[in-house]
Amino acid sequence: MIVIKSERAKGLLQIPQAFDQANLSQMRKYPSDDFILWVNLERDGQNVKKLSFSGNLLDHEKVLLEAVAGLMKGRSLAILDNLSLRECEAFLRDRNSELALENIESSDESKFKKFFQWLRVFRASEAPSEYEFSPKNGGFREMRLVDKIRELKAFLNSFEVQKLYQGSIGPELIDVQDLTVYVQAPYHSEKDRELFEELHILGVTTFSEESLNFIPEA
Image (cartoon, rainbow, N blue to C red; front, side, top):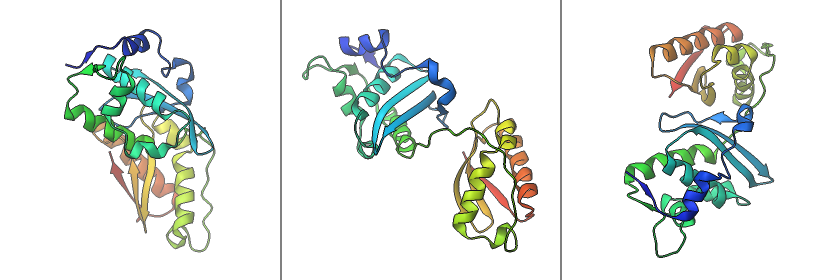
């Protein structure tokens, strides 16, 4: 069990700087079972202006995320490539010679590293919009890759797809290879698999392409 020792960390639990329930509607849910977490990131050019969180987390997870927000403010997202829990823990210390958190394990480091990788390519939430595919030059299969990506992103952000995944983590495009579409989406439970099958059918119907194949990346 991780023990919180520093007064600075305890103070951030009492008066958080990065946790903000008010902007939950603008946040994206972190697509992993490691944390029940929503995130919003505001930029100033290439740098982080503000990083905010909401979710049901353990106390040590909250203070470590407070450290992440503090360390990243005014800096490029590129720092996430090398950010470690040791650096976050050091940020929370009262004195350099005294640990802010005790008993951090390799499993904690692994969970946060995974989160840092996701945050590195963070894409702000977009309001859903109307979408209708207009086949050109022989339909979807004949389109250039860049055009397929554009159309698929618009499709995944459509009202129909957002309504389908209401109350769950929405699907995101990962990659496209010819008629195979790799999508990040929940795929653990029976309900997840049923939702993804509906998404697949909706995609085939929307793009009028029976050979279109959606592959889940959970």
